[in-house]
Length: 119
Image 1 (tube, helix red, strand yellow):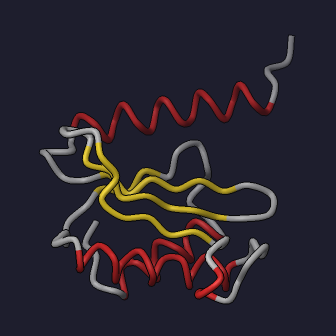
Image 2 (cartoon, helix red, strand yellow; image 1 turned 90 degrees about the vertical axis):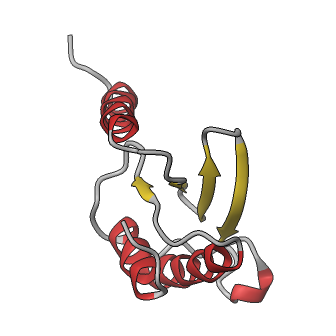
């Protein structure tokens, strides 16, 4: 029986997260979620279980409400980099979830790196 796309996504996500947790060393996690219409990212401290900063294409001040393209992802990436600096975070680990590191996810990661985050 063929494995569904959802099951493959969940396998990729768990494989990625388990590998990242082994090498986290207490760094916050930069977690990305992409839907059909929006893209969002959170900076999470797993040790305390709190969200330190977040950014989304749903925010009106970014000017990309309802868009889910590489341009919107880049704006969200630069926004999370600014907010992470305000929260005092410079080094994170990038949790792409089950999404492939290509296109929008790569644009978000590149913009966050240009904004000063290290991962």
